[in-house]
Image (cartoon, rainbow over all chains, first blue to last red):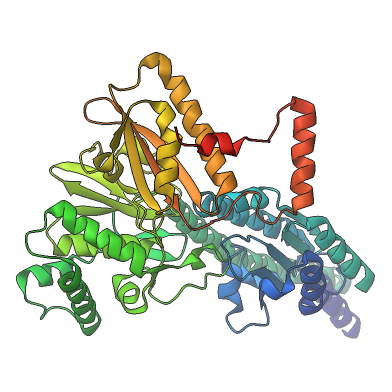
Length: 167
Length: 362
């Protein structure tokens, strides 16, 4: 009886493990604030940039401005963007997803966001539309990253340096 | 049945039951997500398509074009009892402005011009639409907020202009572009339609986008021409109305220099018209003139050639003091020189220009 009971318990544990989602293990997500500081500094225009993140009360609404990904899939994010849109389309977005497999989806939503920004700027500020066209979107582990910057390389290095060091 | 076999059957049954439960839970979760994603996609698709209607259109993902016929109807009828307090306040603000700028006996064109000048010189354009998380003044897309705060995005300019026109009994529509990122107005004068974009002309009222035909407007605007009326009017194109006559194209630079001291619109036509074999020369003259002005003056110079009702070319020029955004903005001087040198070396093309020769009077 005891043996049967133990067997059944083991089976339950096994079934739950088998039926559950396994997203793969991922390294801990870095602090979005600290990461944003490094990347915005590298952009070289920190005093003209505004900041929003998953720490804000209306985080889901804020996220919608840059990505249509289901907020439930997002662990944390930050958006660093030019306060004055006219004459400056600078923007840095990092979305950390809960499951690494969702990073590609997050990156796709960032690409769609950039397409809309390009369309907007082509009407109002064509010079900045050119900057937007050279935007970088990439993924690294659980992170989806967007960089719109005239110092994109430096910003990218800041990301790599911080995320890879912290992990 | 042996006990061990019984136990095995129980174990298998347990596995199947738990797996079924887990599967059902996952399916429900996925369905919910799929349904939500599908709904979001449908919403996104619907918003991304250019709707064939005038009102209830969302511009820039943030600003709504809304009808204000209840306000203009109340003004015309003198009965505002059906308006809520906010609409009543809008009516009062708009009526006061009409009282200031519209005089008895004005023609519809003169009324339109008075409203255009008021909007383009008294309001501050709100560029919040361009920030990633829009930071616009509240209600900058609605006549209430526009008239109260004197700040507007394109939708605010367009709907407020339309409100004024409807109050003055002039037919007017708010047009939006195919990318749903901008809006302006179509106005009917003497049975012909004209485009007017107050937002683009804001700050100076230079008439650059005042009463334009489709042919001229399409150079920097794109809209659903199947839905909105055709604008072929030329009679009230302001630049054409002001055109002075010059002897030949070689008088154009001196004419331009004389008028550039006062920012605004100035235009000319050539006596006897421009012969077909002189058209390339005329275009080259104005292209070079544009380069000279924009490289030597702080403001922005624009121009276009358009045919008037008689089929003769009119050169319409506009100069504003706003420096705007130049593609070379933000590039260090040394870098600009290096770029110019690299191009000159490869194409044997010199950027040196004898501006004294261009600006001398004949």
